[in-house]
Image 1: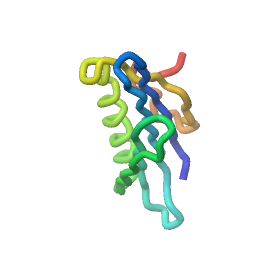
Image 2: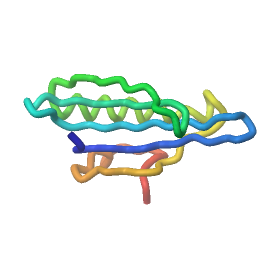
Image 3: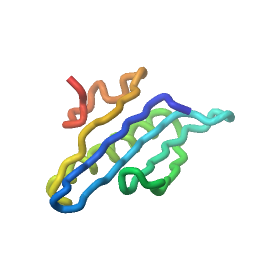
Length: 103
C-alpha cells in the first residue's frame, strides 16, 4: 500500500507530551486509494482511522490536510511535531510548503 508514508513525533517531557502520528497512503489489491492515519502516545499501539479516496488526487489532498493540521500543534498543544521518517517516491509533498519537509 505504501505510495506515501510519513511518521511525525511531538515530545515535551515537561508537559508529558509524547505523541506519534503516522500517515500511509496507497492502493489496496482492488485499486482503491486508501489513507491510513495512526496516532497516539509514542510506544503505544495507537488508533488507526482509514479513509477511502476516489482517486490519487483526493488521497494527496487528505494527506496534505492532515499534515497542515499537525503543523498547528505548537499553538494547540505547546509542542510541534518533527518529521522522523518520510517515504515519498511520488513526490506528493513537492509543491507543499510545510515545516515537515526535509531539506
